[in-house]
Length: 80
Image (tube, rainbow, N blue to C red; front, side, top):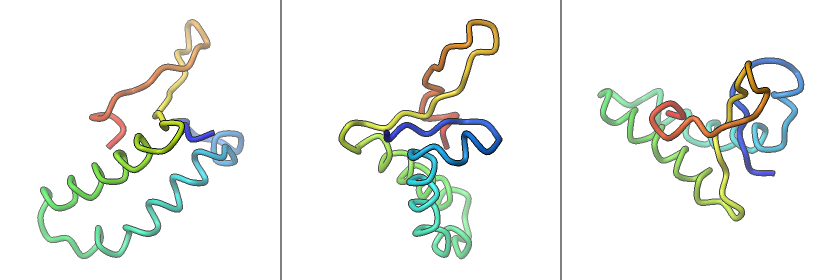
């Protein structure tokens, strides 16, 4: 599963999409930390979101609605 679950806890951390996401982040971490401008950092974060969204099947960034207990996509702005 390529979806990234937003939240905290062992279940979320162990989700396959989250493990894959952390690998994407780890690959870009050095470039991000050495970036001097916010715009550069925003572009790096966007590239990670794009990488997840362009997987096959496409990955989504999901959070759980506490009232209905259903998962929904948070959108690109929030995913960054």
